[in-house]
Length: 410
Ligand code: ASP
Image 1 (spheres, protein in one colour):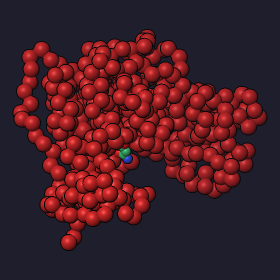
Image 2: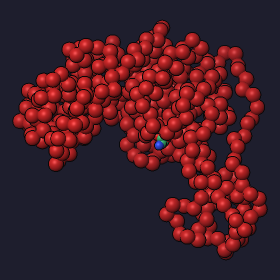
Image 3: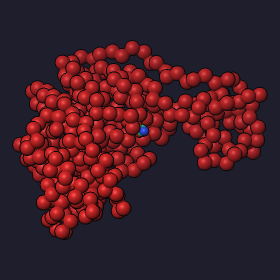
Image 4: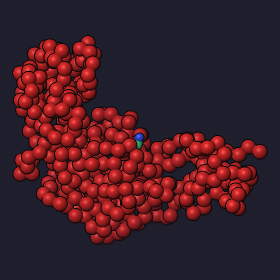
């Protein structure tokens, strides 16, 4: 008898028997332990005495629960699907997590959504976010612009790994917004009992209905299901590989929270009456992590052919002094080089140590308390849209809340 993951089985254990779908072998489990998805959706691990096949498995199809009806008086929210765990299911045959849901499936998985808004849903891609690219960010930005004719708010389900790069790129490209743009992900796929997908998604829809005119990320606030936090798109970072509260606002407070209601903690940009998109990106920018022992020829090749580079330096913003000549030469040749810190928390300061002063004299731009990835995206966007002197000036200015000072709200 050939029993495979995905088959519906009965498993005899020392305490009786259980029935359900046989899941793939746990990665670190004992050889004789099998995991069964019970009919009530919970997974149990049991020591199998014997396994009996009841029926051969088929790929589980999502249940459809009827037509989506539009209700008068509710705002229209567009869900622009891009993929990631929030759009994934576990393939019981292979055990792999596949990006496979259509955008409509979100509505069927979280039926409460239709009480909040009338939904327009479309999948622009179905990829894991490690496969995101600047050209895809541009595609999403253009899709948002198209949706402005029909919608009062945008929700973008997205993989969590690079969600903050996408949120930063949309923050810069969308100079003015007539509605909120809310990115949302999940750390556990929606077919797992511990999934954070439902709460994150419904919270994102609630935020998309507010008077906000910014790009934000909405994710779990804690490891339990009590509330979600609203993070500014230029301040947020995934800070844990697996926890449901992996997303943190760095160097700033979250903008607010979502429980039953949405609550903002402080000031934010309000909806504009129009959408302004500036969607050029210069991809000739590198993001360079300095480490002790980094060789100058490696740095040289990372800068080769580039128009800009963001360095993640140590501490207040340093690299070893033997790398200075390469930086000096490249800056002289017109490469824009910005400095951020590997510490992530805090502000760079090139005035304290001699290395810092030399970097500054070489023309390295200290980027305040901006996150390295945000600086990388910002530099690509500025180089795509402005001349060199403007790029250098704007890199240090707070355009979308990416640097601490209040100016961009005015
Ligand atoms: N690797 C996945 C992604 O970023 C993880 C996730 O979605 O949470 O697409």
